[in-house]
Image (cartoon, rainbow over the protein chains, first blue to last red):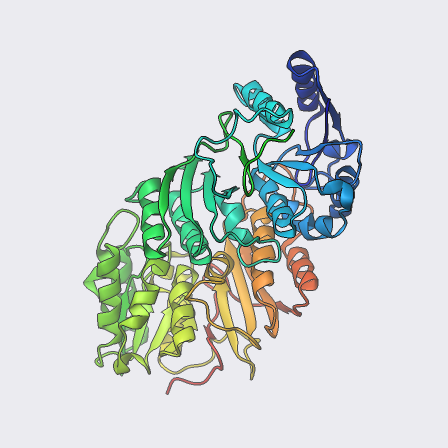
Length: 273
Length: 273
């Protein structure tokens, strides 16, 4: 039995989405037990409850020995506001737990990885059930949490790796949440940013990432149309900034804000069971 | 006679805007002579010509003893791509020159300030002539370049100061363009960003700015409407992040993406003549 607790460190989940995840789990993963923390449905302005509520729900979930994994409900924005305090509140029960999410959840994955607590993993979140073919994303997450490694991003090998939303990684750089990524393969993906903004983010990120093993480019989707073409595509942009900063460009990564988003355990990948 | 050369380190200017600036100068500033570098009107995808053209035009203008000031035509995006190489190419003629601009021009102001070259100044650009009451902005810039200090941001006093677009400052942090801002009053302004993005940028920036004298908040304009209210206004957001990072919040600043945008000489303000 794999026991999963879902909390929402960023923005709230809809109950119908939680219900749909429970349905899928009951149908396809009889050995998985999922509990949605009531905090997932709290609303406080932009956030799934005030900072203190989100922080406490996550600490309580991570420190509860009744669960094997903490699954982030959804991104959006807000995990950076609580990440440092969450890490400070974790105890031994959190140390062997998996923490699964992506996008805004990257702030927590980074802070946990920096602190050496638990097993931070980039992968689908509960809210992905809303996407077309979202059941594939949910299935991939639950399979992984059940010990199946077939959903790993295909380039994951014997090198330590991490995966981030590009904006999240840019905002992490130089903050107390940022782990040392020397020698790591760093995968990035982005959604809903202009190409000039992607260029700007890569200027920033590559200045901070000297010493990594290399950069891999995931999907950059839903790029808004600008009043004129940028003049270079995303891969050209990444190659340009990698070249300027002596960072090896390693090719593509099968991650993104979509149902095909693959799983990237932070550090060295190893089976959960 | 004050001799000004305009170049475009980011995006291109329209000839009609240059003509309108020349008209205003001829009418109100007979002792000012303005030359628009032909590069201002070049177009290469997003940019006012390729990186090499923008870089060379700026180096040529800054190193030309026939001019007292280099005025940036327009922001948009792109100065970060050339700033480091521009600074490396400057000679003695550039050292006493004023460099005036804001927004994306902040990458150059920062790099020049870090290198101790010339007098970087936050203030209106030629493109501001397009705004309603844009003639006020142009007049303020040309008055300042003529030696009139009345357009200074009113809080500017005996303390060293800088002013930045918040996104520009966030992208600068930790890069080879970033000056040491210990003991400085740092003014920030923003345009067209969601409040959650402003919160995210302040998380990043305040983590990098410990040691400054304090933060001042300029105008945050054209905030897009989100699908729900953020739950705090801009000043509350700034106070929150200043509080978390022990940075004094010093109040407002009369800067922004608008025709009232005041002038902030980097470092200690002193008259030009």
